[in-house]
Each structure stands twice: as C-alpha cells, then as structure tokens.
Amino acid sequence: MSGENEHSITAGFPERIVCLTEETTETLYLLGEQDRIVGISGYTVRPREARSKPKVSAFTSARLDRIEQLRPDLVLAFSDLQADIAAELIRRGLTVMTFNQRSVKEILQVIRTLADLVGAPHKGRALVSELSSGLEAIEASARRFPHRPRVFFEEWKDPLISGIQWVEELVELAGGETVFPELRHKRLGRDRIVEPDAVLSRDPEVIIASWCGIKVNKDRIRQRAGWSEMAAVRRRRIYEIKSTYILQPGPAALTEGLRQLHLILARVSGFEVDVRLRPSERVDPDLKSPVPGETVTRNK
Image 1 (cartoon, rainbow, N blue to C red):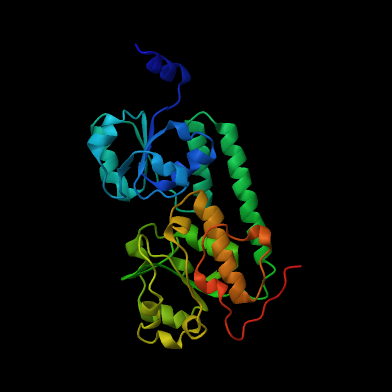
Image 2 (cartoon, rainbow, N blue to C red; image 1 turned 30 degrees about the horizontal axis):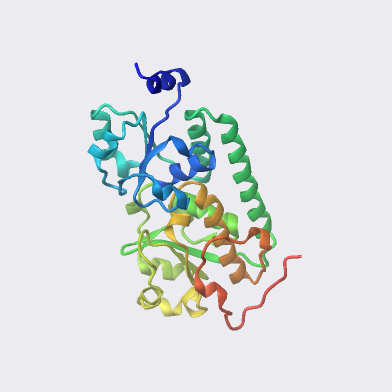
C-alpha cells in the first residue's frame, strides 16, 4: 500500500475532490481546503485562482473518463440537473454527494456539511458565522429604506422564469418586495414560468435580470408587448446581475450577489449604501449613471 493511500485511510477525510459546480469549489477555497480539489466545472470563475485546476465538466455534461483518471475519493454535484452524471459516476464506482439546496438556510447548511466532510468543522462554523453576519448587516441597512420597491427577478427570458427561492429571499433581505412570492418554493424552473401579462399586471418598480451564461438584453425586455406601461420600464429601472454572483447557491450569492441587489434597490429607493456594504466586483454600468428625478437619502 502506498504512503498516499495510507495517509488517506488514516486521515479519514477525502483528499481528492472533484467539484462539478462552482459553489463547492468556492466554499473549499474559503475554508482553506483548496488543495483537495483535483477537478472543477468549466464554468467556474470564483475564485480566479481555481481556474488553474483541471476542468472536467459543464453543467449538465461531464468528461466521465477524465474524472475517473483523476482518481477522486469524492465527487460533489448539484441538483436533479446533474442526476444523470452522478448516477453514471456511481455506476463506475465513485463516491458522489449531490446537494440540492434552494434556500439561504440550506446554502448555509451545505457549507457546514462540506466543512464536516473535509474534517474542518471549526472553519465551517466560522465561515457560516461570517456569512450570517453579512446577511444581517444588509438586512439592517435595508430596514432604513424610505420605500421597499416591488421587484421582478427575471431568471430567464424565454420562457420568462421568476427567481428561485434563495434569490427571492435575498431580494427581500436586500430591501425589495418580490412580485411572485407564491412561486419561490417551486424547485424546478418550469414551475416558475410566468406570462409577460402576469408580470405587467403586478407592475414591478424594478426588474433585475440574470440570464445564466449570456448577457441580458435590456432592449428586449423594454420591447415586450405592453411593458412600456410598466413602472420599471417607464422609470428606466432594469438592471443586470451576472449569474456567477447570484444564480449559484453558495458564498457568491450570499456576499457579492446580495450586495449588488442591495445597491440596486437602495438606488431605486433613494438611499445611499454604506461603503462597507458595497459590492467589490463589477456592477451594472447603469448604476453609475444618474436617473432624472431620483434623490438620495444619506446613510447616517
């Protein structure tokens, strides 16, 4: 038996991990356990240094032979969308854990679970505490808004899909009121499809769009039949948040994604965000341009 195998058995924790989605990769980096990662999703952009790891998958497809060659002792997957990949890897004798988090609470639970899996429970608790404090700080700031705007979060363009649960929860933490709260618990995208007329009837004051993998076309949104009468369109309140910040259920959504939501909603509400709560990544360029008729309340 090789020394490497002896160490693995003695330690009792996985040492060669393949992450098929970005959020588990980012979590392991934040835990300081990135050396265990031997393969990642090709869509991974956070953190940047992770891009040097071997890329073995897209989202609904994977290079199964390449994953086998990496000899992982654990493969991490996400949701029903990767069920077929997980099943085939299991048939090939690999150990697979598939998470299925949909809410903010479940995202934090996954972080704790992942920390336990790699033998770093204390780091996991510390990270969850840090993330929870960030959520509370944004929520406290949002309570000072003079107005909580009605928000339509557009997760996809055709068909129109409203926000998944963790996104809708983050919108509310950030200071908005979602216009389709009854759909948030629908775990599948097809169950959150809405008709354009239904969105128009609820007259959102702001539209926040994130089209997974492609740039949002704001002109396309404005030109939908009847939408010129919508408050969000009339007031030029259509914003984009990149999917890597908000549509992956992990640390990015709870930090950068939430901060971008908060900045958008603060602007719409006429409230200036404390510099300590501002995003650190690139935001929608329209947030840097003044909108006629809008005033700002200083955050004192």
